[in-house]
Length: 378
Image 1 (cartoon, rainbow, N blue to C red):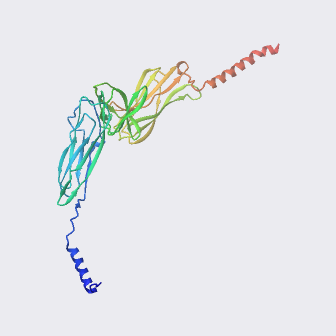
Image 2 (image 1 turned 120 degrees about the vertical axis):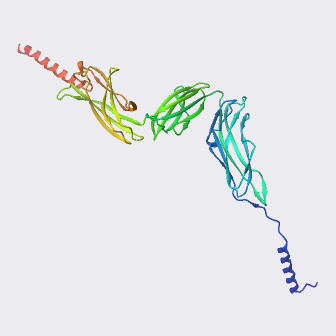
Image 3 (image 1 turned 180 degrees about the vertical axis):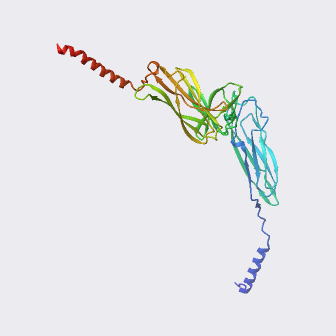
């Protein structure tokens, strides 16, 4: 068998390679860079509604982002329980390149919807298209919660300072059943506007870990309750009433009132510190101890000497210190008690009974010895 000369083989190979290079390859479909995204307050909002309720204004929204460098269409789809209608379902958005759109979310419930706990999902999907040979695909989704009550009431709470300024603390709501508390929600900003199932509730407000306000309330079906809390950020701690005795006696002459002011918020207005005294459970007197220009953040210790207007009497004295500005109460102490147990308060016996008992025993021994002396002489 005869083979072509090597030179002709080389020439044919070069020709075939050139022919392959000249044949047009099928065009590869390019894919656009970028994508879509979805965010907004929707996923943070817990919807609480009753059957038949229709939302007239939005409580939350979604934001859809087109991060592609070309215009696209985006379809919004909703996944919700039967009887729950969402206004954005099956809506198609025309979105220019590198833009976003904010959409309010409205929810309507049918009368026959079944009460319970549900999830709602909103998804954004790119409508498939080919623009100038570029394939555009992508999707994103948000999920939130829906509670449907059989019956409920509304509660709106806000917080103010003693001088009627807004206050922003952390609110913790508890449901009270059989004297047991179970968490029912947590709200920032010192306010809440919510729907609750009927029952008893305890609401506590905190600021920097301190309890500054607390209240209890009851929600009945169809209630529309409004509550205003006043935050206490000035505290009167460590109140004590210490008896001061007359020198060389067990007679009380005065009471030393010790206390500490503690401020956890802003510098206060000028304050008047008032001592509130009761005797055997009945008010005795109120008197101003001192006026101060204001309290900065931190603590300040003080003391005051007290003598009753009619002298000390047998019985129980109770003391409180109130901090006021312009007649408005900013803070007050827990009560401190001082009990006297001898006539006219002449002697303060609390804590001294062993001393008097020992003295009585000595006197009895002396009397016994003196009584025995005449018998011994006989």
